[in-house]
Length: 371
Image 1: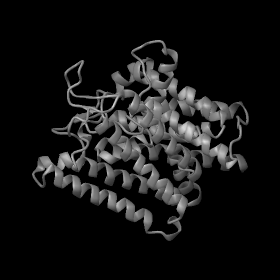
Image 2: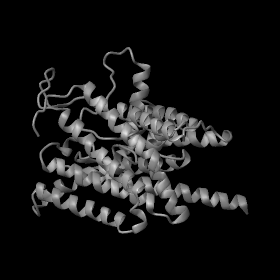
Image 3: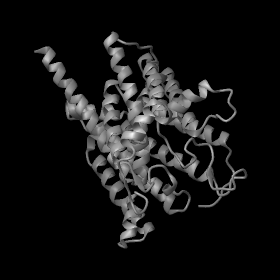
Image 4: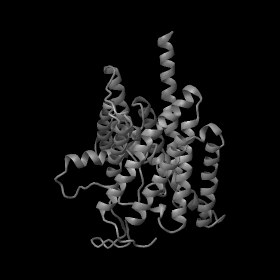
């Protein structure tokens, strides 16, 4: 990876906003929603939205690994591939996030898309998710996370992505394992998604391909354009315009927290609009433009106090769970999976398990009420 030295933090943020806007508009049109995908399967046996999500993962894997193979980015320098695997934080966080997104009628991504469409319930979820995420990063919940969850884990002899783990066995070099892993995992997911004719409709393909390519573009923006081999102030390697100080792509939990922090500390010169914050705001903007243009923008509020309490609880659980698990259904479920990291795969399974459990409980509760 070479020093591009052409991007400023402002440019990185604007590019993040643009990618978020594209994702928001397309997500609104295609009803891209992880919780909805799981719900369709549990309630109706309909796999089409899940196939859309899986094809998006396949595109993200193939594109991201191609960028890495070509030397344009190094996914080994992201937060997802570190040797330390905090499996308890990931599992507990994933379960909490899965339950939370069910209570809140959608994940962090869908919350942003719905805000753009005029959903006031999602605006409330945004606020409580952001506060909870900030508390898990730096506040009260962070103390619990650091004392009870993060100490439980395992430190691997190399990075936790599959190519690195295969390489240390001597079965293949890391570039060879990178190509094989991308083709095997990405190819299998793409084949599963595309094998059914009813899935191969324009909106499903649009949602999957756009989401996957936006993730790839995010890696390119922060990992290549934003890469500086020797920062003029620290004389060290740096990735400009990101909150983590590393290469990033789309994720929508920590950026909620940083958005709230930025609004509260706007006069603090050390705070700025980063790639993640800008991408989250871009999703709202893109969704709003599509909603207004298509005539689907409408204000929507809570049915009753219980509905409000469910959404607040869901936002709090998503904030805690997303930070603990290092990401959400997009952050871990697509961006993290694109690195082929073990932790991301574990997080994805945990999120889906939490969502399925919550959905089944809701169905059971409704059946009891009807009987």
